[in-house]
Image 1 (cartoon, helix red, strand yellow):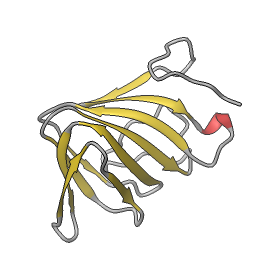
Image 2 (spheres, one colour):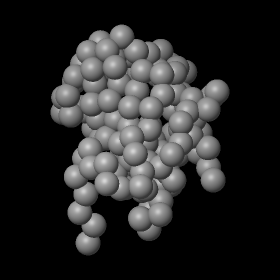
Image 3 (cartoon, helix red, strand yellow):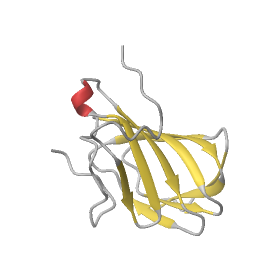
Length: 126
């Protein structure tokens, strides 16, 4: 059994930061599961162009308000607390944070835990 507390800084993996976002990696590949879990906050006013070409991501919004726009179709979806969105086809998308948004992000395959987005908006496979 693994028990972890969000924000616990006693672990070897600290919070990972990027432009407009901060992510606490609470379950990672070395834990031996087929997925990783991140608690991520996107700062109000931030837009992130993302394209997880190597991962499938599910995001459950805990708090905040924004929208996600599908790059290929242009479809826009409102994101509020209680919203789940899943990028089940490696969907290229832009996340717009109207307020600070906090979400639980689940990635498969699991991330190592120290990744930041590359120039394509993806996490590399290592």
